[in-house]
Length: 243
Image: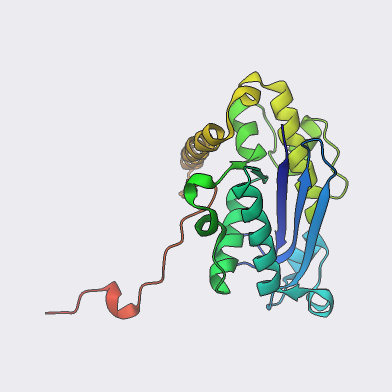
């Protein structure tokens, strides 16, 4: 593998449509060059729930005292990732659908041109070890969290739920997967991105079927790596006027 832009965020919750970024990291690694690490502590502008703090360790008070504004962080992150993509460097993100959709919604919320609109859909190059692991080792039992996947591939995870550590670990897992799978090593990045779009949709449909068999009616998001933005429709346009 050449140069990689490993990306990770920690947030106020688990809904990419509404939850906010608290910490973020981009680590530029590989390609025979020295690593470059960028990180952000963000004041999300809302209270950080205790459950989220228990995961990543950042309190509302800490974020307000030491964090930069969401606008500043999202502007810098989006610009950095766009620059990498435009130079052909893929973004590595574990469960990219969550991280990149959250970044997209934060950008739109703050009037920043989103990543996909900066580079164009045809220039998006994303490698998601979560999707790849499920595709190439689909029958393995057990969890598919970053920690569990790192353990399986013997990748060091220094501090789980630290954005820098998670980003670098995702890049290491991607490298291990490529070393173990000739198909991955030999697939051109643009084709690999397109394949992951299909694989992610198939994996979501399979999980839906599993839940249905368990009596659970749940829709699993199929779009990857960014869930398309649905503009808000004004109330007066939502229903036709009565005759």
